Image 1 (cartoon, chains in turn green, blue):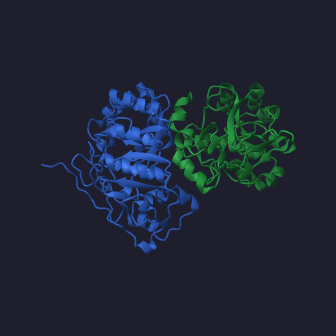
Image 2 (cartoon, helix red, strand yellow):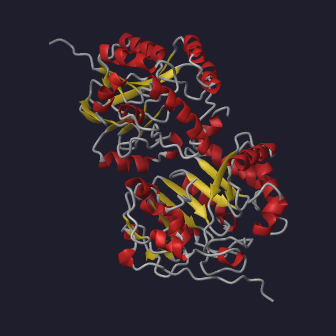
Image 3 (cartoon, one colour):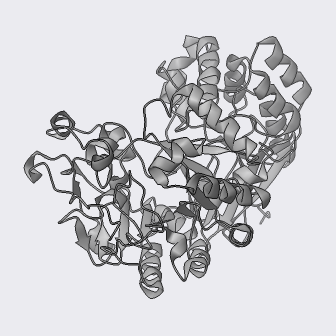
Length: 266
Length: 304
């Protein structure tokens, strides 16, 4: 009987118009032998030329679900629904959203509207649920320092999963609960993770031969100079370009919990 | 002669039948009225009339706090807040901080007057040791003694600013909470000036939270209470799902030495005590009190 190699799955989130990082990430996933790629949404925002990421996702067979950004752009709403509460965060979020909304071809709106709000599968005999923010709210921020084990366990029991995959915050982390269930925030491939590195992050989930799942958070290098140049020529805010060039977040910082905020530069 | 200021009782203003009802979507946040109404100062706008002589709601004992922590964790709570009074007056304050941080993120609401160098160093150790976020929220009601002291008490401005500098010196950036006790305090230019002011104290990542006035507690004796039209705004109101999600009582409860209450605002309201356990206090809340208008209409949230 031929030995079947356990499947490897790539999970990405927060594309933020960054077509260069998207291509680099999909190439990285292919090199690792990933059998499929899930994208947890937020295709637009922050970066330049929003229409470039859609054909790449479609042509390369990525399984895409809807984030708050995709819902807002698809329905041509007035704001991104990101869930920021501070006026300083909302100021930059609106600049970013207005740009993406104005430059997304309406021909993509029906596709964005039709994206599913969550994904489910069984991998390695485990129930997998992908949500954008959290299983209960598309724009809930699940940060590592504000998501206690008991809270995650409660939510995973309510939503019947053994592996919970989320994005939305832009900073990757993973935690295995005492009972073996696993939570992975896959981070974002659209901008760096406020860690002073220019790489972006995604997750690779491996099925164990004995059953069960393990996740690895993976950095991806891409042509950030080219992205920064494109952002400048599109007159996107210099603060956004600085993040691409340095790896430190410069905007939308008020939403960060104290631990994640103090780990950053600003 | 006692310097105690009068305490106005908080009375329901709407019949239960006309008051909007808010179900609990999930118990995410548990507030601890750690020191009850006991505080080292008596702010003129205090919405629950705390002060050195106010023992209407006593301090919680440490065992009681830990029992509620155990229950909150069993129920899958997401985050915790310590408030009072002044929570740093609690004799077991730091051990309780550590016990809470072992279970989830904690925010302490403080007037900053106990934040000397030792306390700041202790806060930094708690911050570094914990897996979850530890946040301090320090109240300051102006950028000068002239603005702050008439509300928070003579000499408090300089002491609070010293506390903020002590936190800055250990590399922590607390959230500064500013109550809009006079018009214009939260206007865009005033906010920008406040950020600059916070930076000038050495806070590398200044954070600000502006709170609307609650016209209950001592505030009616300083300015005015809620008007009839404020009350009318609440009656027969239908909350949108977004408004319901945003309002504190849809996802949190307050525990006190007297049991579980709806929220930090309704501490003194007769009939606001819900149960002796969190599990017994998960039913829907009727927005019967004038102060509810501040949350529903003005969007007040006690969360950071």
